[in-house]
Image 1: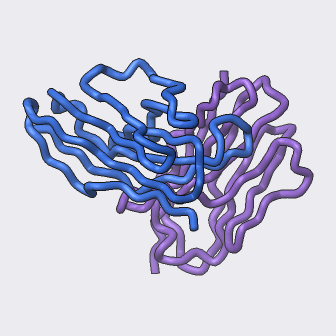
Image 2 (image 1 turned 60 degrees about the vertical axis):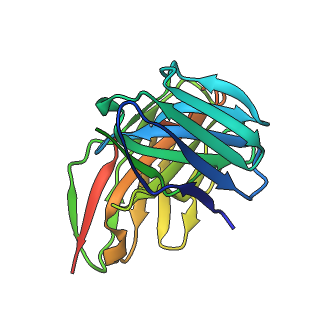
Length: 115
Length: 115
């Protein structure tokens, strides 16, 4: 079962709000990822977790704060976002973080609108 | 550096016909993996097919096949017997041994299947 779930599906927030995006996988994968995707563009990598430790932070602004409470869960905490942060946020997981054959499986995404 | 190029404009395909989506890549690594993903308007990135650089046979998965021409550095996706549900954006992506665990995406090909 290659399923990654994400909640919520849609989120509207003001620039002063604090919200969190959640991602869950039960495939026993040890690598989890956050991507940001603008319309008509490919996904852009934000963060990578390997064995619950942050291994890559692609110079993402501090208003985005990732958290990996356990091997199945990945959160993205949002605070004081800007309208340009409106996008589709995709979570993905793979068996391991390294290896050319490692397939990343994506969740359905959260569509975020910042007003 | 690794680079994926998808340059076809949006495509209209007649239902039940085959369609070929072009993907060329550039890497100096000898060891790499190539992936195709489908993204319908709902947003989820769906993994379709994988080809390793050392795989001698072209990958196939159901109606999807990958026309891998290593010397030309191309990895075209062929979808046979198109269905209305194939309407989506299609992304070609690559991982390399030295690519620091990043999945490099092309810009995508938009496909619309018409009845």
